[in-house]
Length: 172
Image 1 (cartoon, helix red, strand yellow):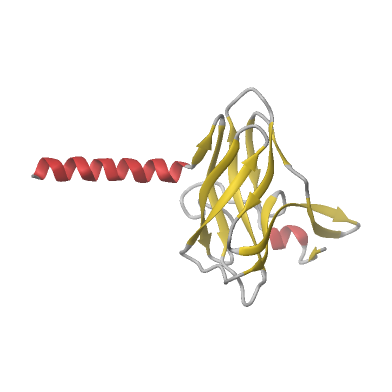
Image 2 (cartoon, one colour):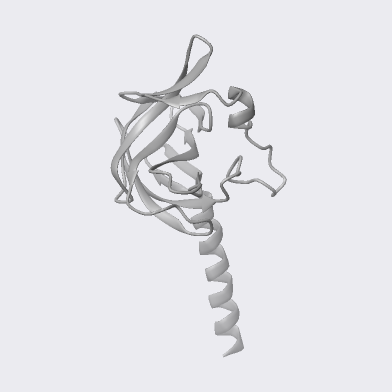
């Protein structure tokens, strides 16, 4: 009986490690997906993640979907004079190698949140790639001040969005 418990514990730990490694389709792996918890009554949110293209061909993230909001869009930030603005994009390029969706750059935007994003919870997200197809993953909700999915775990933190933009973020 003890042997069975040890085997089950080992298998469970292995599955947890695999689950935290990310979701994969073809040569595309998505890992460390996270979102900031809603601050107040925010009607929008964003998800960030790492996308690894382990193949020799470029791919594109062409859409995203989730039931947490009325609309789910792909966005980036652009400079408009001295103001940083978010803009919807038709796709996010995923060249061979690693692509990071991060604050101040490409991200998945949730417009018309049905509920607040609560720290410590998670939600499902489906990404659709031009070549790799659909990847279903889980997005972990972190604190409203979070800078990255691995914050506080010895990994390099992502840049601070508000500081980088001098408080001049506007959405159009």
